[in-house]
Length: 166
Image 1 (cartoon, rainbow, N blue to C red):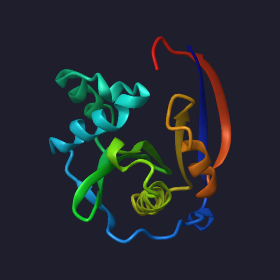
Image 2: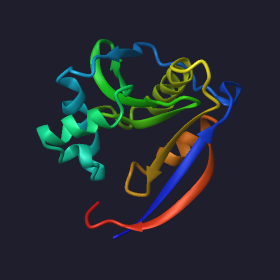
Image 3: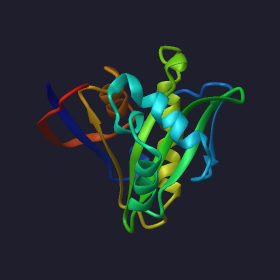
Image 4: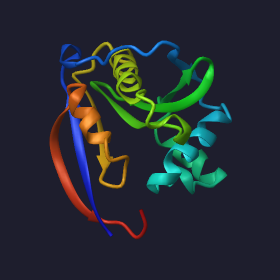
């Protein structure tokens, strides 16, 4: 199947176009070793064919080892896990490696503010960051790219690839 991968970036925290806040929606740090990391990433990614949905325990170990600075944050609504964000801080940039809501929380008007919280945290992770970036796929939620653009990200690259399964 044909896939379009779109890369977006924000080069200044002032470019963030914050969404209206959602009472009860919060973002809290999550330990790398938390069993919530593989559980929530797999549940968020299953509908979109993310590798995290199929990753084995050894695969998780390898994924964690790719970037020892990788950090995680839990999105929660009124204390209930609602989604997750994975960050890869580098010397002068922060990649939002994964961002998503659990299926039960999609379509409830949480995505804009969840992304606002995720972006604010990304900028806080590196005092020397010159940009925050991420990529999204045409297999991701249909509103994903629109949400990124609304929050202030701009597209800087697209790639056409082929994926065996969505």
